[in-house]
Amino acid sequence: MNQETSIAKKENAGALSTNIFEDDAGAGSQNITQEDLALPFLKVLGQLSPEVNKQNAKFINGAEPGMIVNSVTKELYDGAKGINVIPVHYERQYVEWQDRGQSGNAPVAIHSADSDIVSTTTRDKSWKDRLPNGNYLENTANHFVILMGKSPSTALISMKATQLKISRKWNSMMMGLKLQGKNGLFTPPTYSHIYNLKTVQMSNDKGTWFGWDVSKVGPVTDKGVYEIAKNFAKKNNKGLVKVKHGSEEINSSTPY
Image (cartoon, rainbow, N blue to C red; front, top):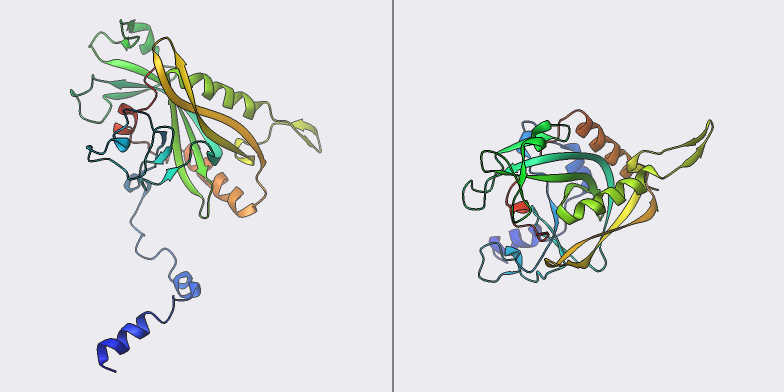
């Protein structure tokens, strides 16, 4: 047996013990802050999404309209089965965009939901709310969630246009939850329950597209997962979670 063969056998002898990794937990990431992280968008793929176009650089093998994709990991999820998520924070904003091709992939500005900028807009022929400067606003509902799976992870689901009514329905479901406590009925935190988000085909007189369908699964039963969700909620409430809006929304599957 030569030396190279001996080394190869030792390398393949087995995985290192988790205890070894735990001893060095967090090493190498000391200088990584929230600003250095990309919060994944969970978006619904449509007929015009670049991920389903084999000629596009963003094409993902196996991607089909109606599927759900993680914008960072590029992992695909079956839209019919859906994904299970824990909602931890909600924020509505007016995102200001220039027309496609004029400003790259980034919005011009982000305006809070209570901004009076909406009063300065005019609805154009394509139903966009135009500002005096020619840019347009998109009323955007941001749902910050924990994506369930083998390893729970943070993500963002943005809803706009026709999906705003789905967002309102989801918010109503969360606010409508009541539990019996020692002092009577109370509204539990949004991150106390798991929801399933599937995709369904929708249509109106303008066209057909895939959108979200939300249903309640049940309460969170794992304390560790609950703590992960609670900590993510705290970070959002403190303004520590930064959203980088971009091409994920420009190329949205929800055009109406």
